[in-house]
Picture 1 (cartoon, helix red, strand yellow):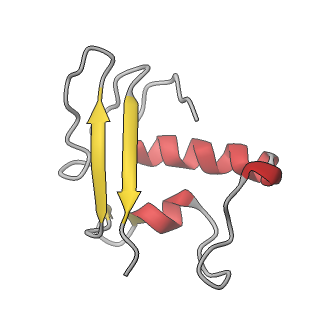
Picture 2 (picture 1 turned 30 degrees about the vertical axis):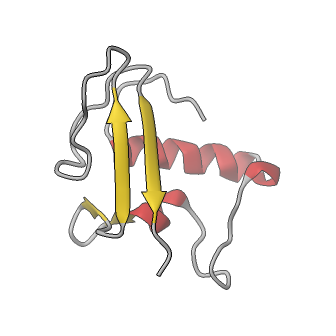
Length: 90
């Protein structure tokens, strides 16, 4: 999905979740016996305000500038960024 607005990774994930809520045929949720119902729930730990440790991030702005999302979830994303988040299944 494409997010063209500026904001944090948390805001971007919330925006994607909202889009999927409005278009459930595109949603991969629920996952894991129905317990996980959104990307935010899958990727972000709200108690620590951090991306879960078992996730990996490959995030770059349009000019290939690195974005340290694992270190700082409050980092403002560059418009038109390419972000890949990988969730490791345990």
